[in-house]
Amino acid sequence: MARTAPPSVPPPPGPASRGSLSLHRAYLRSPLGLLRLGQLVMGAAFWVTVAAHKYEGAAHFALFAAVLVWLLTLALFGLSLLGRWALVPWLGSRWLLTNLVHDLVLGVGLYAAATGIMGYKAGRKSYCNLPGYSQRCLYGAYLSASICGGIAACLYLFSGLYCLSRRCRDQRDIV
Figure 1: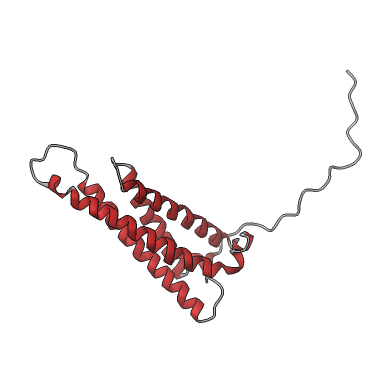
Figure 2: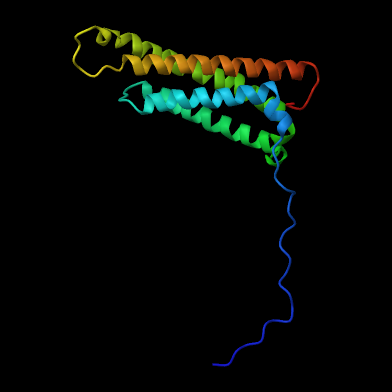
């Protein structure tokens, strides 16, 4: 077989890069960054606790709400940490307002509902916490989930109030 000669024309250049990725350290040290870390930890504790145990009925909604808010919080945290919120169409120019609505509407609202559901279910299972009860008891799991959800809802409230105070002072950035 005959070998073909390499092409004499270089390949076309690739698309221009948007810059290197680096951590937005000021965000990580800000109150909002620290609250986001707490929200991610408490949210993960909530949904892992629920998912690791048998659940039925309204606990399906509580698990859905917790995972949805956790994933959205993870996306907000990642974009904010990398300083790439301008890449999000329409929301990037309103990033402080986006964080505010996420925290107060989704975070507080859904976690408060999920906490109420798990607290109600814990109350319904409180009989199995008695000594000598031989069946599997979900009281501790439901109670732990409701405590984690309550703490997460409070963290979302605090971060929402932080964003609201920045917005009221006519600041448009999250840091």
